[in-house]
Image (cartoon, rainbow, N blue to C red; front, top):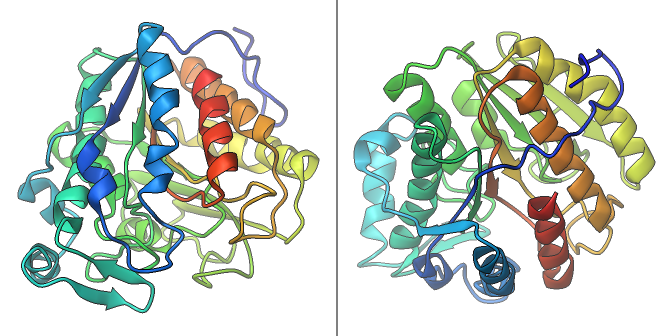
Length: 318
């Protein structure tokens, strides 16, 4: 592979290799509340995609439940107790975040998938992983639920990589159209983890200004409404790619939200389905360039069901 440059697309080879898929039927049982776009249908539409990939030889495994020690590296004990209690007493946790009787089980599966993915790639059992799980996680802070998110699965995965496996540099790239404020909060003072987010601004949750730098490990790429394929790819090549390569992570985790698609009802960004295939190929090429496993991608947002299905398929196929 040609040497990477500070700007421009990396040469993309066929680096998908031994891809692992992780999901679980329990994730469809999470009740996000009446009328919420974060519904079980988001996983139901992905089932045929996962089945086709499995038939083609990719391994699909069931997500385990995450253990409390892994959760406690990110979330407070009091908050975890609150989430666990929703199994007996469902409740509204935030104005747009509800937990039903099965939500605790579902979110433990989602976080368990993330931890299992880290274990698998670091053990050499997979070269890359896609976790088709819900609820999403990147808005959840150490002490609060918000934005449809309960446990911050990707933050739990990153802390598992650093605190359990001893990695010194882990990168998280979040391309959900909404800023991953919870993930940023977790790692704002942790130099071992670089958090790079591209998101529409202004938009929920109102965070993610480029001036938010943490201890030099936070990079926020604020996109204006109407950002299209050409502009997004340009900003990836000029800003995101050099940041990822410059940090030289030992592991790349991805908050894969597909709500920057032009058809999504919750944003005004205008990415196309093909952009997610391009983006996946670029992230695999980053890992190849750095001679690291991954990427490990976790499903976050994406609320137009047709666009979600097509975009996830394009992302995985790449």
